[in-house]
Length: 293
Image (cartoon, rainbow, N blue to C red; front, side, top):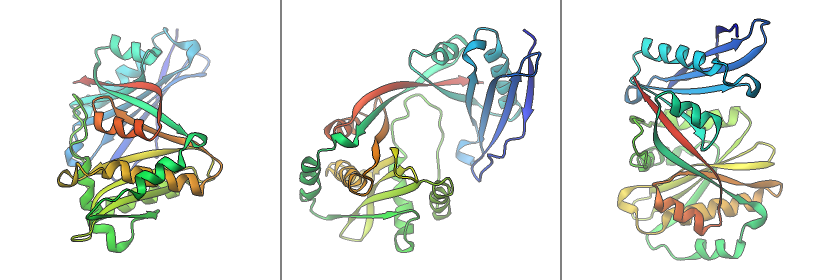
């Protein structure tokens, strides 16, 4: 098969990464596959590249994926990357492709879904109304209010020790500008960001947070983003409390929402138990792979 790999100009550059792109086309200039390589640019992740590769089903097993992969890996090396990560659904052609090309499994992610119709409002109310001495809940939509910006930024450290298993993911450093930029990015694509936090009443600092992104039209499925509790506040049921409140708010404000999605590392047994207790059911599993360069 005659194959041409063409570099593309990708506008998806941001303050923390830039992206390279390639198009594979056949002798008739018909597109048969694409590859995108995100190069993280922050100091804590300057060693890392993330690959997304797609080949049209009809064109698989014709070396299209291999050619695109070779091109992307060469670019990662040229940009002094130490490793390339990629994800594929367990048992999929992508799963088998990555395994056959020297990628190693580093993380298993379990995806679950809570249909809106299955939300147990009574059970949620019991969780939310259960006393949590020394803490109170607060919430907002969109960008964090100015008076909470600093303590919310500090609470992002709750994600520093989330299970990543063998992934060489590096470190992500948050400041107020980055927090606001993340909320702005969600708004600019037309979605709605909802945040629930647990506040330590002794000093009004944020002890933990959970984020939910809902489609702008209020339809389809919402997606949970990060949920974390700072180490010194763990063991008080704050994670379940915050997530229950987030579900309650989504259930009440978005009658056309189909459900809520979340993904959790297989090794994160604590968060998996929280999701199970709130009624989330498994949908599929993906594997994160890593190629060490």
